[in-house]
Length: 59
Image 1 (spheres, rainbow, N blue to C red):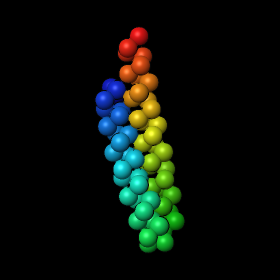
Image 2 (image 1 turned 135 degrees about the vertical axis):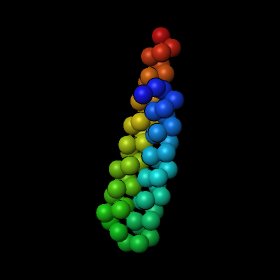
Image 3 (image 1 turned 60 degrees about the vertical axis):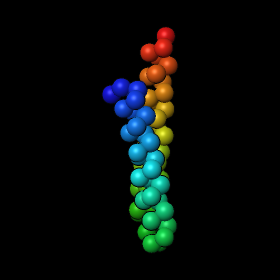
């Protein structure tokens, strides 16, 4: 995937993860809350991956 694609995917994963995490907290569902946390982390990794690809392309 390209730089922009990774960054968009990361942003979406962070947003959806945050929603799942909050719904899990509100409904007292630790599994959903953990799934949301994991998805947020995945989003941060995807965003970072996109940033690194951009820096490499700038070289």
